[in-house]
Image (tube, rainbow, N blue to C red):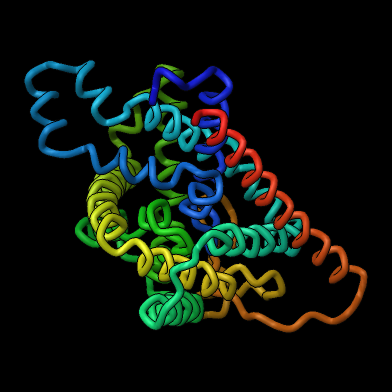
Length: 339
Protein backbone atom coordinates (compact mmCIF):
# COMPACT_ATOMS: atom_id res chain seq x y z
CA UNK A 1 0.00 0.00 0.00
CA UNK A 2 2.78 2.42 0.93
CA UNK A 3 4.82 1.70 -2.19
CA UNK A 4 1.94 2.82 -4.42
CA UNK A 5 1.59 6.18 -2.69
CA UNK A 6 2.77 9.05 -4.90
CA UNK A 7 4.06 12.40 -3.67
CA UNK A 8 0.66 13.91 -4.52
CA UNK A 9 -1.07 11.23 -2.43
CA UNK A 10 1.22 12.03 0.50
CA UNK A 11 0.54 15.77 0.23
CA UNK A 12 -3.20 15.14 0.10
CA UNK A 13 -2.91 12.84 3.11
CA UNK A 14 -1.31 15.65 5.13
CA UNK A 15 -4.12 17.96 3.93
CA UNK A 16 -6.68 15.40 5.07
CA UNK A 17 -4.96 15.41 8.46
CA UNK A 18 -5.30 19.20 8.47
CA UNK A 19 -9.01 18.77 7.84
CA UNK A 20 -9.41 16.19 10.59
CA UNK A 21 -7.47 18.30 13.07
CA UNK A 22 -9.52 21.41 12.35
CA UNK A 23 -12.80 19.47 12.52
CA UNK A 24 -11.87 17.80 15.81
CA UNK A 25 -11.38 21.15 17.52
CA UNK A 26 -14.74 22.64 16.48
CA UNK A 27 -17.61 21.75 18.83
CA UNK A 28 -20.22 19.81 16.87
CA UNK A 29 -17.96 18.71 14.02
CA UNK A 30 -16.37 15.25 13.84
CA UNK A 31 -12.97 14.50 12.36
CA UNK A 32 -14.31 11.02 11.64
CA UNK A 33 -16.71 12.54 9.10
CA UNK A 34 -13.72 14.01 7.23
CA UNK A 35 -12.08 10.56 7.19
CA UNK A 36 -15.30 8.95 6.00
CA UNK A 37 -15.96 11.41 3.20
CA UNK A 38 -12.33 11.62 2.07
CA UNK A 39 -12.32 7.85 1.67
CA UNK A 40 -9.65 6.78 4.18
CA UNK A 41 -11.80 5.94 7.25
CA UNK A 42 -11.41 2.13 7.02
CA UNK A 43 -7.66 2.38 6.36
CA UNK A 44 -7.37 4.71 9.36
CA UNK A 45 -9.19 2.25 11.66
CA UNK A 46 -7.27 -0.70 10.20
CA UNK A 47 -3.91 1.04 10.76
CA UNK A 48 -4.76 1.94 14.36
CA UNK A 49 -5.84 -1.65 14.98
CA UNK A 50 -2.30 -2.72 14.07
CA UNK A 51 -0.99 -0.97 17.18
CA UNK A 52 -1.21 -4.19 19.17
CA UNK A 53 0.84 -6.85 20.95
CA UNK A 54 2.68 -7.86 17.77
CA UNK A 55 3.71 -4.24 17.08
CA UNK A 56 4.91 -3.91 20.68
CA UNK A 57 7.01 -7.09 20.38
CA UNK A 58 8.57 -5.84 17.14
CA UNK A 59 9.39 -2.59 18.92
CA UNK A 60 11.06 -4.10 21.98
CA UNK A 61 13.03 -6.47 19.70
CA UNK A 62 14.35 -3.34 17.93
CA UNK A 63 12.79 -4.30 14.62
CA UNK A 64 11.80 -0.69 14.09
CA UNK A 65 11.36 -0.81 10.30
CA UNK A 66 9.20 -3.94 10.50
CA UNK A 67 7.12 -2.32 13.24
CA UNK A 68 6.74 0.87 11.19
CA UNK A 69 5.59 -1.04 8.11
CA UNK A 70 3.32 -3.34 10.14
CA UNK A 71 1.28 -0.45 11.59
CA UNK A 72 1.15 1.37 8.22
CA UNK A 73 3.40 3.95 9.85
CA UNK A 74 3.85 6.30 6.90
CA UNK A 75 0.09 6.68 6.53
CA UNK A 76 -0.39 7.41 10.24
CA UNK A 77 2.67 9.67 10.40
CA UNK A 78 1.52 11.89 7.51
CA UNK A 79 -2.04 12.01 8.81
CA UNK A 80 -1.03 12.94 12.36
CA UNK A 81 1.49 15.46 11.00
CA UNK A 82 -1.42 17.21 9.31
CA UNK A 83 -3.45 17.11 12.54
CA UNK A 84 -0.62 18.60 14.60
CA UNK A 85 0.05 21.37 12.07
CA UNK A 86 -3.69 22.03 11.95
CA UNK A 87 -3.91 22.35 15.71
CA UNK A 88 -1.42 25.22 15.76
CA UNK A 89 -2.38 26.87 12.46
CA UNK A 90 -5.60 25.99 10.62
CA UNK A 91 -7.59 25.69 13.83
CA UNK A 92 -6.39 29.17 14.83
CA UNK A 93 -7.75 30.50 11.53
CA UNK A 94 -10.95 28.61 12.20
CA UNK A 95 -11.21 30.25 15.64
CA UNK A 96 -10.91 33.66 13.93
CA UNK A 97 -13.54 32.85 11.31
CA UNK A 98 -15.99 31.52 13.91
CA UNK A 99 -15.49 34.66 16.00
CA UNK A 100 -16.12 37.06 13.08
CA UNK A 101 -18.36 35.02 10.74
CA UNK A 102 -19.97 32.50 13.07
CA UNK A 103 -23.24 32.03 11.14
CA UNK A 104 -21.52 31.40 7.82
CA UNK A 105 -18.92 29.01 9.26
CA UNK A 106 -21.63 26.92 10.94
CA UNK A 107 -23.59 27.03 7.66
CA UNK A 108 -20.66 25.51 5.77
CA UNK A 109 -20.33 22.80 8.43
CA UNK A 110 -24.08 22.15 8.28
CA UNK A 111 -23.85 21.72 4.51
CA UNK A 112 -20.85 19.40 4.86
CA UNK A 113 -22.77 17.21 7.31
CA UNK A 114 -25.71 17.01 4.86
CA UNK A 115 -23.29 16.11 2.08
CA UNK A 116 -21.72 13.48 4.33
CA UNK A 117 -25.10 11.88 5.01
CA UNK A 118 -25.70 11.65 1.25
CA UNK A 119 -22.22 10.24 0.66
CA UNK A 120 -22.47 7.50 3.29
CA UNK A 121 -26.08 6.62 2.48
CA UNK A 122 -25.89 6.53 -1.33
CA UNK A 123 -24.16 3.14 -1.55
CA UNK A 124 -25.80 1.61 1.52
CA UNK A 125 -28.44 -0.91 0.42
CA UNK A 126 -28.84 -3.23 3.41
CA UNK A 127 -31.92 -1.57 4.91
CA UNK A 128 -34.04 -3.81 7.14
CA UNK A 129 -35.70 -3.60 10.55
CA UNK A 130 -32.34 -4.05 12.33
CA UNK A 131 -30.55 -1.29 10.42
CA UNK A 132 -33.57 1.03 10.65
CA UNK A 133 -33.59 0.45 14.43
CA UNK A 134 -29.85 1.19 14.60
CA UNK A 135 -30.42 4.34 12.50
CA UNK A 136 -33.15 5.52 14.88
CA UNK A 137 -31.00 4.86 17.96
CA UNK A 138 -28.12 6.79 16.35
CA UNK A 139 -30.36 9.77 15.59
CA UNK A 140 -31.82 9.81 19.12
CA UNK A 141 -28.37 9.60 20.74
CA UNK A 142 -26.98 12.32 18.46
CA UNK A 143 -29.88 14.68 19.18
CA UNK A 144 -29.85 13.91 22.92
CA UNK A 145 -26.17 14.76 23.22
CA UNK A 146 -26.70 18.11 21.46
CA UNK A 147 -29.23 19.28 24.06
CA UNK A 148 -27.44 18.22 27.25
CA UNK A 149 -26.27 20.86 29.74
CA UNK A 150 -22.51 21.12 30.41
CA UNK A 151 -20.86 20.21 33.71
CA UNK A 152 -18.33 22.26 35.68
CA UNK A 153 -14.59 22.20 34.94
CA UNK A 154 -12.72 19.39 36.66
CA UNK A 155 -8.89 19.09 36.60
CA UNK A 156 -8.70 15.79 38.50
CA UNK A 157 -6.12 13.78 36.51
CA UNK A 158 -8.21 10.59 36.43
CA UNK A 159 -11.14 12.58 35.04
CA UNK A 160 -8.80 14.29 32.54
CA UNK A 161 -7.62 10.83 31.42
CA UNK A 162 -11.27 9.82 30.93
CA UNK A 163 -11.87 13.03 28.95
CA UNK A 164 -8.99 12.07 26.66
CA UNK A 165 -10.52 8.65 26.00
CA UNK A 166 -13.95 10.13 25.26
CA UNK A 167 -12.83 13.18 23.26
CA UNK A 168 -10.82 11.16 20.73
CA UNK A 169 -13.99 9.25 19.81
CA UNK A 170 -14.74 12.04 17.32
CA UNK A 171 -11.83 10.77 15.20
CA UNK A 172 -13.12 7.20 15.12
CA UNK A 173 -16.90 7.74 15.28
CA UNK A 174 -18.19 9.97 12.47
CA UNK A 175 -20.87 12.34 13.75
CA UNK A 176 -19.68 12.09 17.37
CA UNK A 177 -18.00 15.40 18.19
CA UNK A 178 -15.25 14.92 20.76
CA UNK A 179 -14.83 18.66 21.35
CA UNK A 180 -18.57 19.11 21.98
CA UNK A 181 -18.42 16.22 24.47
CA UNK A 182 -15.61 18.11 26.23
CA UNK A 183 -17.93 21.13 26.52
CA UNK A 184 -20.57 18.89 28.10
CA UNK A 185 -17.94 17.46 30.48
CA UNK A 186 -16.93 21.03 31.38
CA UNK A 187 -13.30 20.66 30.29
CA UNK A 188 -13.18 22.10 26.75
CA UNK A 189 -11.32 25.27 27.78
CA UNK A 190 -9.03 23.46 30.22
CA UNK A 191 -7.94 20.78 27.73
CA UNK A 192 -8.14 22.43 24.30
CA UNK A 193 -7.27 26.02 25.21
CA UNK A 194 -5.46 26.56 28.53
CA UNK A 195 -3.25 23.45 28.51
CA UNK A 196 -2.33 23.87 24.83
CA UNK A 197 -1.47 27.53 25.42
CA UNK A 198 0.71 26.43 28.35
CA UNK A 199 2.60 24.05 26.04
CA UNK A 200 2.96 26.75 23.37
CA UNK A 201 4.29 29.28 25.92
CA UNK A 202 6.69 26.68 27.32
CA UNK A 203 8.14 25.88 23.88
CA UNK A 204 8.49 29.60 23.16
CA UNK A 205 10.35 30.20 26.44
CA UNK A 206 12.64 27.17 25.97
CA UNK A 207 13.62 28.35 22.47
CA UNK A 208 14.52 31.70 24.06
CA UNK A 209 16.66 29.99 26.71
CA UNK A 210 14.18 30.79 29.46
CA UNK A 211 13.53 27.87 31.86
CA UNK A 212 11.72 29.84 34.57
CA UNK A 213 8.52 27.86 33.87
CA UNK A 214 10.00 25.11 36.08
CA UNK A 215 9.19 27.31 39.09
CA UNK A 216 5.72 28.14 37.75
CA UNK A 217 3.45 25.67 39.57
CA UNK A 218 0.37 26.62 37.53
CA UNK A 219 2.28 26.02 34.28
CA UNK A 220 3.58 22.64 35.47
CA UNK A 221 0.05 21.71 36.50
CA UNK A 222 -1.26 22.59 33.02
CA UNK A 223 1.51 20.57 31.36
CA UNK A 224 0.65 17.56 33.56
CA UNK A 225 -3.01 17.95 32.59
CA UNK A 226 -2.08 18.04 28.89
CA UNK A 227 0.21 15.00 29.24
CA UNK A 228 -2.51 12.95 30.96
CA UNK A 229 -5.10 14.11 28.43
CA UNK A 230 -2.79 13.07 25.57
CA UNK A 231 -2.20 9.68 27.19
CA UNK A 232 -5.96 9.21 27.54
CA UNK A 233 -6.47 10.22 23.91
CA UNK A 234 -3.90 7.69 22.66
CA UNK A 235 -5.48 4.99 24.85
CA UNK A 236 -8.93 5.83 23.54
CA UNK A 237 -7.77 5.98 19.94
CA UNK A 238 -6.21 2.51 20.03
CA UNK A 239 -9.05 1.00 22.10
CA UNK A 240 -11.83 2.43 19.95
CA UNK A 241 -10.04 1.39 16.76
CA UNK A 242 -9.87 -2.25 17.91
CA UNK A 243 -13.52 -2.18 18.95
CA UNK A 244 -14.66 -0.52 15.73
CA UNK A 245 -12.55 -2.84 13.60
CA UNK A 246 -14.27 -5.80 15.23
CA UNK A 247 -17.82 -4.50 14.88
CA UNK A 248 -17.21 -3.27 11.31
CA UNK A 249 -16.05 -6.78 10.46
CA UNK A 250 -18.92 -8.61 12.16
CA UNK A 251 -21.77 -6.05 12.16
CA UNK A 252 -20.89 -3.70 9.30
CA UNK A 253 -24.45 -2.84 8.20
CA UNK A 254 -25.67 -2.12 11.73
CA UNK A 255 -22.54 -0.08 12.47
CA UNK A 256 -22.86 2.00 9.29
CA UNK A 257 -26.57 2.65 9.87
CA UNK A 258 -25.80 3.75 13.45
CA UNK A 259 -23.07 6.07 12.14
CA UNK A 260 -25.54 7.55 9.63
CA UNK A 261 -27.93 8.13 12.54
CA UNK A 262 -25.19 9.77 14.62
CA UNK A 263 -24.38 12.13 11.77
CA UNK A 264 -28.05 13.01 11.23
CA UNK A 265 -28.38 13.65 14.97
CA UNK A 266 -25.29 15.87 14.93
CA UNK A 267 -27.17 18.32 12.67
CA UNK A 268 -28.73 19.57 15.90
CA UNK A 269 -25.30 20.56 17.21
CA UNK A 270 -24.16 22.35 14.04
CA UNK A 271 -27.51 24.05 13.30
CA UNK A 272 -26.26 27.46 12.04
CA UNK A 273 -28.94 29.63 13.61
CA UNK A 274 -28.12 29.55 17.27
CA UNK A 275 -27.26 32.02 19.97
CA UNK A 276 -24.12 31.24 21.93
CA UNK A 277 -24.66 31.16 25.69
CA UNK A 278 -21.55 32.14 27.62
CA UNK A 279 -20.60 31.24 31.18
CA UNK A 280 -21.16 33.76 33.98
CA UNK A 281 -19.95 33.77 37.56
CA UNK A 282 -22.22 34.05 40.60
CA UNK A 283 -22.19 37.85 40.23
CA UNK A 284 -23.49 37.59 36.67
CA UNK A 285 -20.18 38.65 35.08
CA UNK A 286 -18.80 36.93 31.98
CA UNK A 287 -16.02 34.39 32.53
CA UNK A 288 -13.02 34.53 30.16
CA UNK A 289 -10.37 31.89 29.43
CA UNK A 290 -6.60 32.48 29.54
CA UNK A 291 -6.63 33.91 25.99
CA UNK A 292 -9.30 36.50 26.79
CA UNK A 293 -12.11 34.62 25.03
CA UNK A 294 -15.55 34.24 26.54
CA UNK A 295 -16.18 30.67 27.69
CA UNK A 296 -19.01 28.88 25.86
CA UNK A 297 -21.60 27.18 28.05
CA UNK A 298 -24.08 26.00 25.43
CA UNK A 299 -26.20 27.11 22.46
CA UNK A 300 -29.81 28.25 22.10
CA UNK A 301 -31.17 27.38 18.66
CA UNK A 302 -33.86 29.34 16.77
CA UNK A 303 -35.65 29.44 13.40
CA UNK A 304 -34.20 32.25 11.22
CA UNK A 305 -36.14 35.09 9.62
CA UNK A 306 -36.16 35.36 5.84
CA UNK A 307 -33.61 38.09 5.10
CA UNK A 308 -30.35 38.68 3.23
CA UNK A 309 -28.21 37.20 5.99
CA UNK A 310 -30.29 34.00 5.93
CA UNK A 311 -29.95 33.82 2.14
CA UNK A 312 -26.16 34.08 2.42
CA UNK A 313 -26.21 31.34 5.08
CA UNK A 314 -28.19 29.06 2.76
CA UNK A 315 -25.62 29.70 0.01
CA UNK A 316 -22.84 28.71 2.42
CA UNK A 317 -24.78 25.52 3.25
CA UNK A 318 -24.80 24.73 -0.47
CA UNK A 319 -21.06 25.48 -0.55
CA UNK A 320 -20.54 22.92 2.23
CA UNK A 321 -22.46 20.31 0.24
CA UNK A 322 -20.37 21.08 -2.87
CA UNK A 323 -17.12 20.71 -0.87
CA UNK A 324 -18.15 17.23 0.27
CA UNK A 325 -19.23 16.19 -3.25
CA UNK A 326 -15.89 17.45 -4.60
CA UNK A 327 -14.02 15.43 -1.95
CA UNK A 328 -16.14 12.41 -2.85
CA UNK A 329 -15.31 12.81 -6.56
CA UNK A 330 -11.59 13.10 -5.75
CA UNK A 331 -11.76 10.05 -3.46
CA UNK A 332 -13.52 7.98 -6.12
CA UNK A 333 -10.95 9.02 -8.73
CA UNK A 334 -8.06 8.16 -6.40
CA UNK A 335 -9.50 4.74 -5.55
CA UNK A 336 -10.06 4.00 -9.24
CA UNK A 337 -6.49 5.06 -10.06
CA UNK A 338 -4.96 2.96 -7.28
CA UNK A 339 -7.04 -0.05 -8.34
